[in-house]
Image (cartoon, rainbow over all chains, first blue to last red; front, side, top):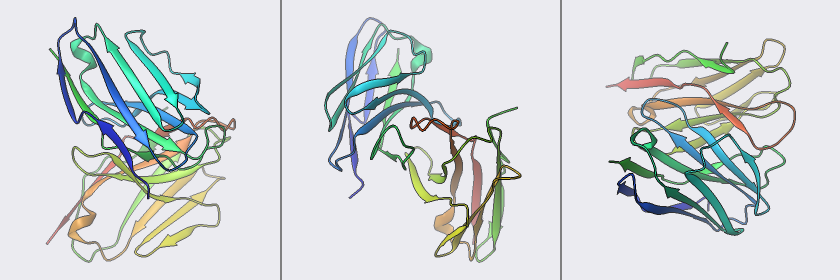
Length: 114
Length: 112
């Protein structure tokens, strides 16, 4: 089973709102990732968690705040976003983070910032 | 130069055709290589990892040429359901941090 789940599927939020995206995997993977994908572009890495610790932050603005409560869960807290942050946000997981194993993606959250 | 380069296409082929996609990568220290497919408005799905000796999975064959820093994907007997964007994916550099770099993708449209 290679299932990664994400909620919500769609999210519309104003620039002053605070919201959170959630991701869950039950494959026993120890690395989890957040990606951002704009239309007709490839996914761009935002954050990597390895063994529940933040190992990579790709210079993401502080209005995006990741959290990894346990090895199965990954959150992305959103605050004071801009319209250009509208995109598909993808979560992925892999067996480990320090070795490049295959990554499995969730269905994504389609975010619109108004 | 982009880290991972692909011909964006689109490739329009009839059912049953054989089609090949190519990809080049710039970092000679990269060690992990993958092909993903992505359907419109869906998430990327792993198609296959690419190994130095080349590997095959049904109608799909992947090849790696480290000397030329070149990866290929061959699809035989194309089906309508193969229509998608195919992403060439490479890990960034020799330090295995899980950082993947995605090519821009090659669009395939298989027509009846």
